[in-house]
Image (cartoon, rainbow, N blue to C red; front, side, top):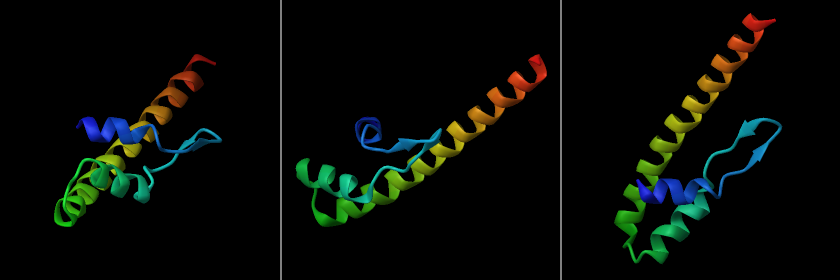
Length: 73
C-alpha cells in the first residue's frame, strides 16, 4: 500500500484529468527496493489494478461533485 501512495506522486495531472502512474516509475521503484524481476512483475500488475480502481474512484467523485453543483444552481 505504501508503494502505491509513494508512486501516486509520479502521476500527471492536467486539464482536470488524472493520469496513471507511469510504468517506468513502477519498475524503478521495484528495482530500488531490491525486488527480483518476478516480484517486480507481480508488483506491476498489483499497482495497475490499484491505479485503475483509484482513477475510477476519482472520476466518480468528480461526477458526484458535478451533480451536487448542478443541483445547487
